[in-house]
Length: 180
Image (cartoon, rainbow, N blue to C red; front, side):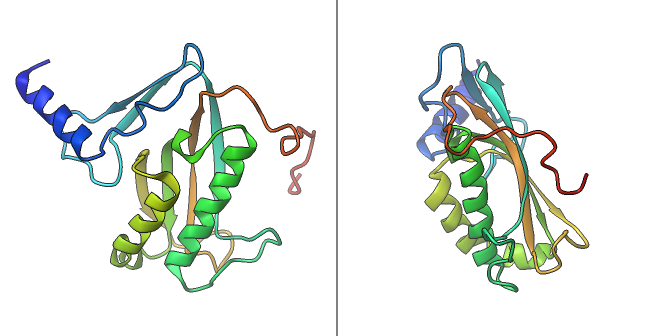
């Protein structure tokens, strides 16, 4: 590695970038944050996350629905963001993981400008749940989401390095899709 690359790595580590590399792992599981020096320095995300071993959990799109399927705080991007993160957390924890296991997030919003205007508040919520862990992320502005009151939806991938599933929460069933 060149001296420049070593310096960039030290800078990132001192600023909390590349967090997650020290998380506890199961045997033969590894995770590496990828932020090439030739790309713009990431803020609030990482360019890539390489994983090996463990299990991958595919996270379906989660909007700001509560347990009854009602959108929390219609018209409030920040409150909806927090509910979405809570919903993702519930899925990851039911599979035996934690939010720091999320390695990829796609964020879909109905108003990119409203999202950008709230970046500080959204960042505070992100850090309250994820700490200084930043997955590889992408933001997409979309015309609409399935629930017309939803302003934001997230989907992603978690790399589970712990091998226990909460049996009480995880009950595989056949043909549970309501739409079939």
